[in-house]
Image (cartoon, rainbow, N blue to C red; front, side, top):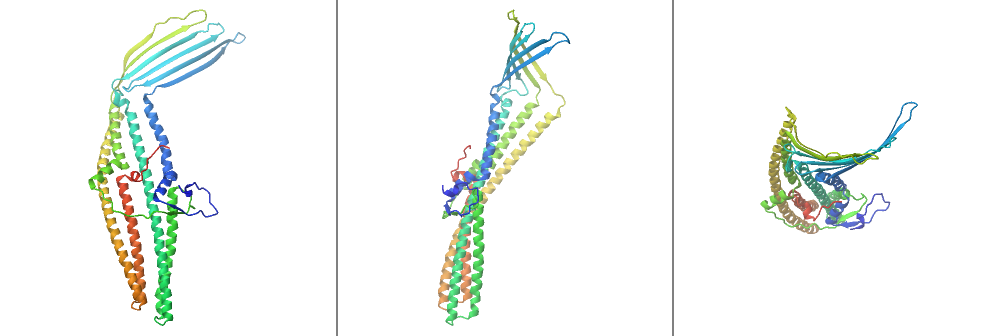
Length: 469
C-alpha cells in the first residue's frame, strides 16, 4: 500500500506528496477505513453473540448458591441463644430437543447451636417436565434456534449489501475523479488553443490581414475557456474530497487515479443474469429468508394455541443427621403425573395465529413482487449497458471527426480561407466532442457497475471476502 493509506487524523502544515492509486487500491482502502463498513462490522459482533446465545439453548446450565446466616435470640436478662447455618445448593438444568426440561438440584445445610446438636441435612432431586401438546416436539423446541440462524443469515446478507453499496460508491467516486481530471485537461487544452488563436490574430492584425475588431471573438472565447477551466479545477478538488471521504482518509490526502479506465464490451445472457441476481442479490435473499421466518413463526403460533399438557416426574433423596447420632434414614421420594393448563376464551392466542398467517401471506406477496422487480431491473441494466456501449462508439467517432474538422479549419484559417468566428465555433465543437466521449466512457463503466450491483456480484468482481473482525 502507498504511504497515503496511513491513518491521518491531524492537519499537517505541509501538503503531502501526491500518491497515485489504482481503483483496486482505493477499494482496499475503503474496506479498511470506511466508517460505514466499520460500523457494519461492529454490529456483527453483537449479532454473532445473539446467535451463540440462541444456539446454547440445549447446553446444560449450572448454578451454585452458597449461604451463611447467624442468628441470636434471647429474653431480657436471660442467656442468649446463638445459632449459625451454612448452606450450599448446586443446580443443573438441561433443555431437550423434544421440548422437555430436566432439572437436578443438590444441596447440603449444616447448622450449629448452643445445644451442640449440629444437625446436617443433605439431599438431591431430579425432575423432568415433558410437554405433550404445547411446546412438544422437535419443531417447537428448536423454533427459536432456527429463527436465530435465519436471522443470522439475514444479517450476513445485510453486511454484504452494506459493503457492496459502499464499494459501488467508491468506484463511482473514483471514476468521477477521473472524469473531473480529464475534463480539466480538456479545458486546459482549449485555453491553450484559444491563446494560440489569439496570438495568430494579433499577428494577422499587424500584417494587415485582419481587422482589429475581429479579434473580439477570440478574446471572448479565451475568457470563456478560462472560466470553464476554473470551474473544472474546482470540480477536481470536490471529486477528490468525495473520494477520500469514502475511503476514510484525511481530507488533506493528495491522491491521483492511476487507471486508464479501458472499456470493452461485456455481454450477459438474460436468463443467466437473472439466475445470478437470484443467487447473489442481498435484498432478494433477505426476502426469501423473510418467507422462511414467517412460516416458522406461524408454526410456533399454532403450537402455542394448543393446551398445555405436560408429563411431570421427579425422584430424590433427603437425609438428616445430628451430632452423636448416625444419619436418619428416609425413603426415596418419587412422583409421576400429568399437568394440564387449559386456557378458555383467550383471544390473544388466536390473535397471534392470525397475525402470523397474515405476515406469511405478506412475505410471499413481497417475494413474488421482488421476483418481478428483479427481472425488470436486470432487463433495464442490460439494456442500459448495451446503450452505453453504443454511445461510446458513436462518441469516439464524433470526436475523431471533430478533431479532423478542427485541423482542416485551422489550416484554412492560416491560409486566409476561413473566418475567426468559424474557427472558434469548430474549436468549441471539439471541446464538446471531447467531453461527450469522456462522459460516454464514464457512463458505460458506471452502467457496468450498476449491472454488477443489480446482479449482486460486486464483491465477487473485486474478489472481496467478508471475514469476521
